[in-house]
Amino acid sequence: MHLKGCYNPFMNAKKLRQTYLKFFESKDHKIIPSAPIVTENDPTTLFISAGMQPLVPFLLGQPHSQGRRLTSVQKCIRTDDIDEVGDVSHHTFFEMLGNWSLGDYFKKEAIEWSFEFLTQFLKIPAKKINVTIFEGDEDAPFDEESKQAWLSVGIPENRIFPLPKKYNWWGPAGKTGPCGPDSEMYIDTGNESCGPDCKPGTCDCGKYLEIWNDVFMEYNKTEDGRFEKLQQRNVDTGMGVDRTTSILEEVYDDYKTELFWPLIEKIQEISGKDYVNNQYQKSMRIIADHSRATAFLMADGVTPSNVERGYILRRLIRRALRYFRQLEVGNPGLWPIVSIVIEDYSDLYPELTKNKVSIKSELEKEEQRFLQALGRGLNAFKKLDIHTATGEILGEVAFDYFQTYGFPPEMFLEEVTGLKAKFDEADFWKTYQKAFDAHQELSRTATEGMFKSGLADHSYQVTRFHTATHLLQAALRQVLGDHVQQRGSNLTAERLRFDFSHGEKLTPEQIKRVEGLVNAQISKDQPVTVEIVSIDEARKRGAIMLFNEKYGDRVNLYKIDDFSLEACAGPHVENTSELGHFKIIKEESVSAGVRRIKAVLD
Image: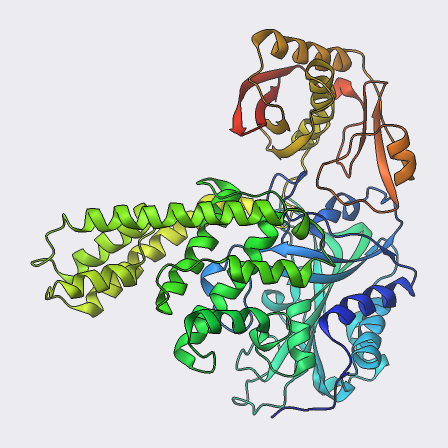
């Protein structure tokens, strides 16, 4: 049952973004630009996965150059549920509408404005809005403040659902840190209830769809497991553009909205298959989703490889190509779909158009590499003696081929079946899935620290290393020249890793000079000062800025003597004397024109 005519018929995705930002601008919020997907100063994650992530230092108390009320549309990548993509709502790339209070307003205002925007601007009837709140436990009490705020705007008590921490509590991202209750808003789609236990937040039958989440960071979890009240209470909200557009268009399938349908139409045209046929929907959704994510990752400088960000991109491209093959397209290419993404989003994200040529080139190279890998897999397959193999053995071999060659299990099964081997197909898939699940768990465990929200590790050690990167970049520019620009940074509690533009291997003499310049600044006990200035003033002073970063009207300008001047979000130590002794332990090539330094602080 759809409620055609109830929602704002003039609110398309583009207007949704604009209206959201203008609404919060009218509530004295400053509009800040989307940060790049590729993180620069967060050691805990490969990509920006939430709107709050670029704001971590400010949620922890550092003053923001734009003030205490902020709003943005942030582009995000989430990689922990790639294998769930294929349903109506999971995505790897998405845009998150968000508004933040950095120690300013709290629950009452956030809830009132959420309700106002949903009902007066999106024209969603108040009777269709259901909300969840935190029910309380031994760590924190029932969220009476949120309940009263919802009652005050007209949501009756029978549509306010108290739920436990599992459903209505955010964080901390790591073992310790900021956290607190949240309040989620759900739209009643009008579908029939699946039973007496059907309620928003706990049931996924489709009757209730989440549209918005208000997070109230009011606690800090300590190392001994206690929850203390924070001195600076924050509000962090999130509303996904894809989900909201689906609700406004009342299709409840993100791939039928204006955001995805042009991609689906192109896939239909190429494959000759119809999206209305259920057997093709999963493949088409995966191709569309991964093509969109591919465009945005490449626009932010990620290229396919076997490590970290490049591995995620490679996996997305090859997974999309495998599902294209399931649509019986011989040697498909993703560029026809990716090019539509670039065209549709270029007015909002000019980096897509700016990098269009390189995106096409790198994409086609990766597709060719994948075809070659499949060829190697087919050649290796010819050497297998499969006629006496059981389904279990073939399932294990199929997974090994998938890992080694990117050889899809469906293709492996087709080849085995074509040779008229006798085996139990159910055993094949059971064994393959078991091996696949084991690999997924191993990968998740090994990389879980790389996909947290960013509040997990802004420790003192990481802060020291981050400050050291300022000195390192300034030293590299003195020794090598002003062409040196930061191209990436990854910090842990043990070392810093700094990627920079330079075409030649550093000589031992150059490395020694860089170390000497950094250590000279450390030995001088220089204060690390910060000043909030206009972006024009920062440029006028010759401040270093990240090559792919977008800045607002005002920036935090960090200065170390007359040696380093850099626009940055932090975190930083107060004095260079806190850094100790700087030592470069490795210098190597990353890619053409990009070098990498690893260094420690003794």
